[in-house]
Length: 101
Image (cartoon, rainbow, N blue to C red):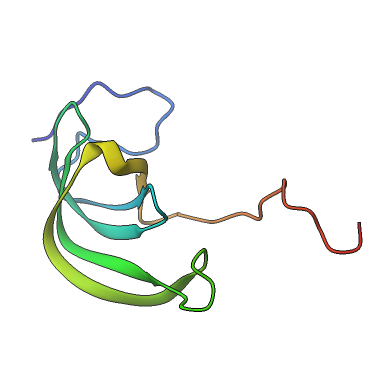
């Protein structure tokens, strides 16, 4: 069983084994996979990992297309965000300037 000291505000229960998570990395890559393990440096082991592909015309936009990576080890220094795969909802950036303002 996985255990960790995590803040009570987090919605991600790292105590539950085999939980599907979504991970964002520095540089803009995003993956989903089943969390199999981690350490105190936030190195992650993910199984059944799928990487979301970027739009070739807009490198900041992710497509719904994925590629399978399988079992992966993710280096903790590149991890920016970990959240449950279910219930993930992206919101509009309130700091972007709107056209016509």
